[in-house]
Image (cartoon, rainbow over all chains, first blue to last red; front, top):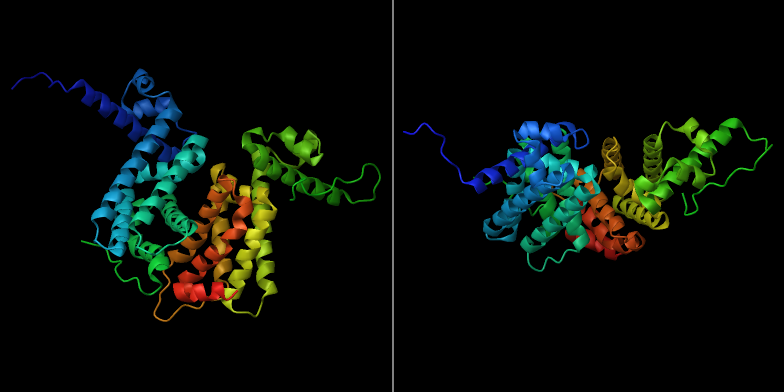
Length: 207
Length: 220
């Protein structure tokens, strides 16, 4: 056995550092808000040199926006995949998508708080990212919806906005990890306009 | 809070108005000035001088009423929510004695009319309050909750066998607020009344079912 540290590929190390800085900004903004989070806090938390931060990002806001963008993309990919493979029918598909979203929030409470709570009021750029993400989730819902349901787009926006609102309350209460418990209520809320009240049955948590 | 900033400037010199009245009038004009400025040029550019100018109140008088622009903003936000709530209560009272769906109809109609008539009010209540951070998020949350109470003030009739999960009312009100906020951001406040039938159907459907909701909406 060699006693020297194994050489990791340069790109791997660089990518890993980028990830660490994005995780650090998520944690710090979740803990103390965007405004109070300083570059010094971020580099300390991520254990990188200040120069590394500026080599990778234009500054605090650029890093913050990149982190939001990266997390919302991941969230969208996870939810979209769940919708595509879940159940095979629109009802199962929407429930599977919601379940994936709730699990993601429970597993990444800081990142979720950054994207769904902090982003709205931190900077105009982050607010735009939030709005764009809402729009993307409206599109996922439309794609998964029962054929011929033909709900007006404003209603689908209200459904996505309503789910976001309930999750924001949950995150702000500091209970992101219990988000999966909301699955039955949120499933019924989202499915009712499509299927009618009292007809939504398949909302149990899938094993 | 109409487009010219609302309240009239009071006459100069001796007018026999009580100091309390003058102060209250000034305060209200400042709140209107901020609300209107916010709508037209955004938070950054709505400076204390601009608010003072619009309200015809001197800068030093501004600071007799508010500690800072943020302080004035919070007061303006509260005033906006109070105004909306007041209008909804009036609308519901006008159709007192009628069925629950009729009261919901009256309230939604009034809400949309109000936003169309006063886009600056729609903007501060639906968009700026959330975006500003500055401690207003909690107020936004309280406002949503108070509108949930309003919706449930009289027991909505549920269809047989249906159970209303706890989060549904909040999701409806929070979801509508979010959707209407997006219309404001898209510069479509003026067209909000066009959304009346679909919004009414959305709110009613959660309680009485999609078919019954459609029937009520189309029965006018």
